[in-house]
Length: 102
Image (cartoon, rainbow, N blue to C red):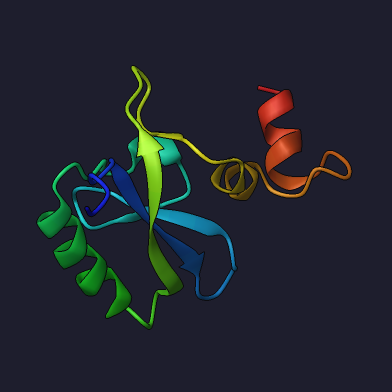
């Protein structure tokens, strides 16, 4: 029996900067996971993914990432997506430095 569909977001890497980005309901790529569109219907998620993968002048490697709903927006269900969201953990720079000084 196939697994039940779980909520997902579309994520990719920005073509020019390489940053992790997420697709919003308004078709805008954002670096803020909280603003990402949480897809709860499998057919709609597949359609949105096809559309995102066609945006080759903006992003590379678009895929569906498992998430769970939260009061603040989607949250990762797997450590890989949490790591992608926060970046490398060897020292504070980039996203980690910004997050810890806010």
